[in-house]
Length: 143
Image 1 (cartoon, rainbow, N blue to C red):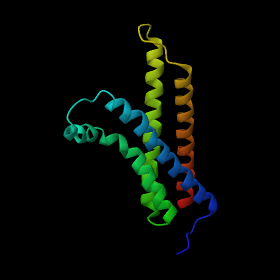
Image 2: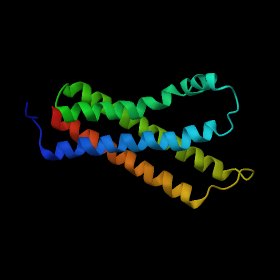
Image 3: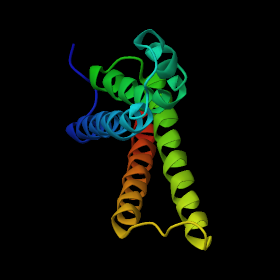
Image 4: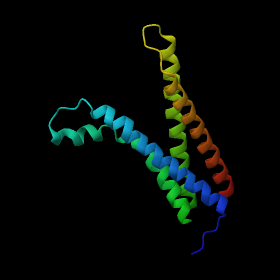
């Protein structure tokens, strides 16, 4: 079956899929390694530790699922809904981290954040806003 959308929509779905994969990779790299760096408990309890962070994977999974469904050309409404859930959770997470960084920078008893962390969070917020704009464009095309 031939997809009913143009190559610009196809490239938008592919870019959202790559953002979801990059976001999931960043969660694995920074989140799990940081969380498990001091884990000295028995290995049979490792699953309990990982399951306590299941909610953090909802955003990248929803974004990847929505982009994959959009690339297949099926379930257009479900695809757009999943993309919106993923994009808005990514934007909320980046805004939360940036506000926490600014709040901590104002406290004289907390060490000031490094410039590379500030640049990384600002670039991540710009990518999140770009993905929101892409989701808006896709949802307008779907109507």
